[in-house]
Amino acid sequence: MNEIDICTKNTRRILEIYLQKPAESFDYIKLRKLLPTLGETTIRDALRALKRSNILEVSHQKGRLHSGKGTERYSISNDLAAFKKLSEMYHINGIDEFIKSEYINKVKEKFTPILKAKAGRFGFKSIIDFIELDIHLSPITSIQSTFPPKLLLCQPFDRIFSDVYILNKDDIKKLIKRAYIVYSNFPEIFSSAIKYTITQGKDNRNHMADIESLVKQAIFYWNISSHNFDWVFSCLMDALQSEEEMEFYIEFVDGVTEIRELKNEPGSLPLYLANDTLVGNYFMSEPVQFGSLRPCICFGKNVIGEETMTYERIVSEVRAHFQGLINP
Image 1 (cartoon, rainbow, N blue to C red):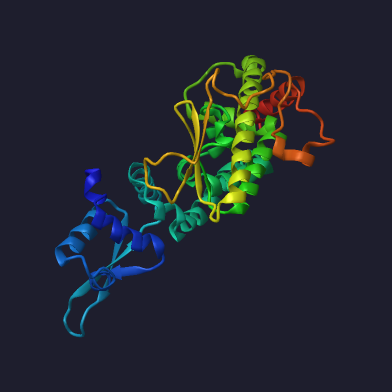
Image 2: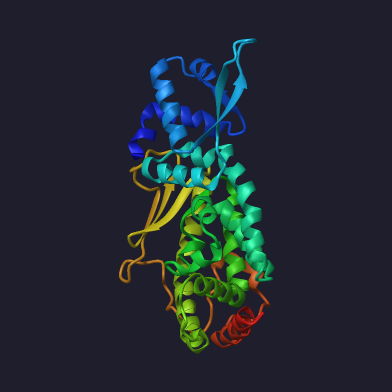
């Protein structure tokens, strides 16, 4: 159906009630009491639109004694189809309640075990840990993906700092942990992402022959992303000193990394902004290398004493992992 049918101001007011209390169901009479300024026709039309779009599910409860009639009660669906529809509405209209409501946690609880079970066939704890953090930090795209680690290969490794919701101070720790999991388990996560991408398409090439080239490119892209991650981290630390609330959305779009406050209206200027072009990226003060992975500054003592993630080491381990994934 046409998007505008379910994105009118009044329909959104009704939808936000459900997003705030996703476990509850409401009938027309209860909604009328909660929204006394809306007319009967407006509420009924909104409920029909949300029902047709599969965002709301309908159940019946018995009406007055001996009346033989049933009263329709509506509750929000936690199916993936409804989640995708709400995500589209969020990106188009900026529905903050979608991200900050209990509904997102309800969907996380449902789909995290499903995605972790799929990841389990690779036998790597690092992938399961990555998925759990990825769903928490980047829920909209993560839950819709059949295998979130493959998203690391789209705009390679920008995912460690982009499409991230920071809703409290603890989320900064989770952001660091997700990036560190990728860094410290780079060969197995990279191998699994490649393998999954291949198995989902009709690709009959001999990727074993391409491993050296793929690893060299991966190191290059990771090292660029690690610089951008450091910039994002420094901005969040700055915000931590000056902001009472920590509710941000971080996104890399059109060559620019933006950190936006969720409380602001869609279209408002970002709180922080960085150019990621070849000339404009002032934060990259050291040359990007192909020889080894660059650890993010915020990893700190975690990487002290660890064996350096060199190109030779990564190639060797990726070959071993990739061979095992092809011939389990």
